[in-house]
Length: 208
Image (tube, rainbow, N blue to C red; front, side, top):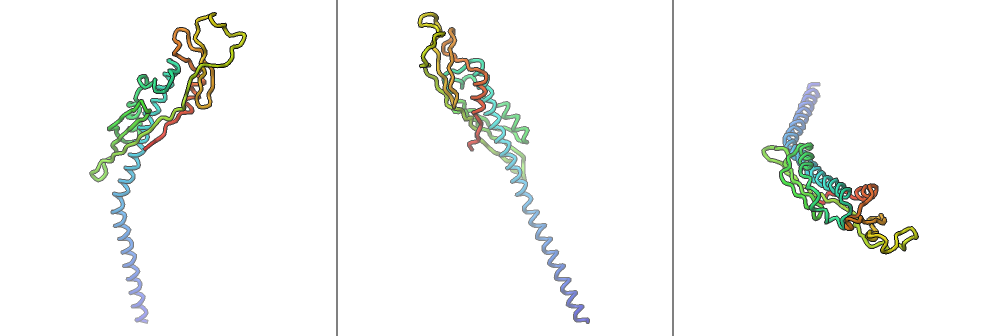
């Protein structure tokens, strides 16, 4: 009886030591993993903030293009609008702040319709997290050419007025005829529905 009791006590003691060892190992692992978890979480949030800032800048460019198309019409190419549209800095700063970060570097490449954003996030264990992202506005390809549709009986005969000839506007499935204005033949007024369709077919894309 005594021998069995001693064996039982030794087994219980060994089990207790094993349990303590497991708990101690888990505690050490938690203490070691916690900084890594915090750093990983901060980096993920920083990446999200940089993505949001870059995409917000590109969205601002898209809205500026909508205004330009509405007020100035189609100017012949997207490149013609780069001196008209803004860079979206304020919008990018706002979205970085909403995601718990500060915008520290920003560049809008209006020629290629790209926005680069770099943000600074939280300080974790003495290190400041920084993240960057680039977004691009993808636009459909648009062309214009003289309208070769044969005139109807209702169309003005050559020489009857001074209106410039109609132009065919083709863009990503859109195919319409536009009549340039008499005072500004280079301006092609697009219907609001066509402008909406053009910009609905455009989208922002993260490129890095």
